[in-house]
Length: 226
Image (cartoon, rainbow, N blue to C red; front, top):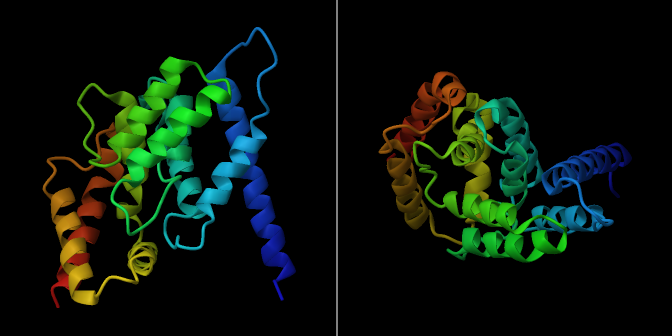
């Protein structure tokens, strides 16, 4: 039997996220000459995706954390609401055994957002930002890309217990991969990120998260080699 308190807490979290999505979409759409579609069905579809059973790290908790970090970094973005929409879609399609999740998530945004009343130019920018999360390597003049990528990677600078929970969640999502294969693949991802000249591109990210993230990743890399 479900814990009533846990169920109520989950419901509150989801209701809060629905409200956040509605406000973001309405702000991004701007003034409309005619009534715009209700944003809540789009929020519900996205939240259903973010709660799929194969997810252990890429959950509504991750979505909420990324949205919170965008709030922290919004002064560095050219269009914070477009960045927030990109956060909603950036892992909306997530199947751990598939390699094209980001592109499929971007294509979902390209289908859903025009129907939801978002202008074509902003829809294209959301899709571009979603695809950018493949590399997490935005250009020096890509302010929106820098904010999204910094927000997505900020988990790397979490305190040790939260970082360990993140790493464990990622491993659980790839439970079907043998240990030696997973270790090799995970180590390659960490080395690719550590090889970037800068993990974080916003001033806040560079100051607050860079050093801790590199320490955490090197520590995980050491554990993977044992």
